[in-house]
Amino acid sequence: MYIQHFYEYDGSFAQIGVFVVDEKYRGKGIGKKLLITAEKWAEEQGALKVLINSGNRDERKESHSFYNKMGYKAKSIGFLKDIRN
Image (cartoon, rainbow, N blue to C red; front, top):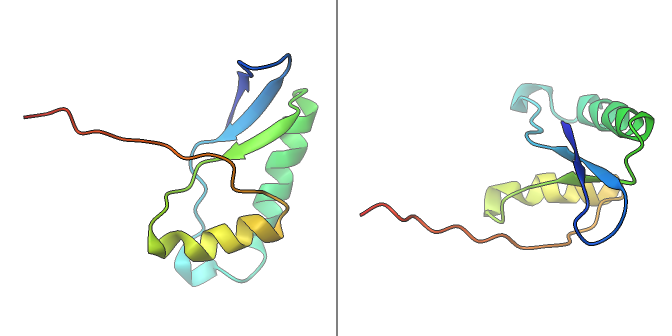
């Protein structure tokens, strides 16, 4: 997790680079506790928002549901191009 500055307006946001709970521990509230702790840390750093990147693959649907339940909204789309020959 790290702090970044907004490009479009004043202020900063926290970005969670990787957020994973091992499958055998899911559904026990660990992810919720981790995310709440991360949000508190971000607030202490003066961040206005928290950003989590998550792929659009089918196996991510459960994660997306969790993020929605935690108050996060899907906001953007990313693009990736392999430039190797």
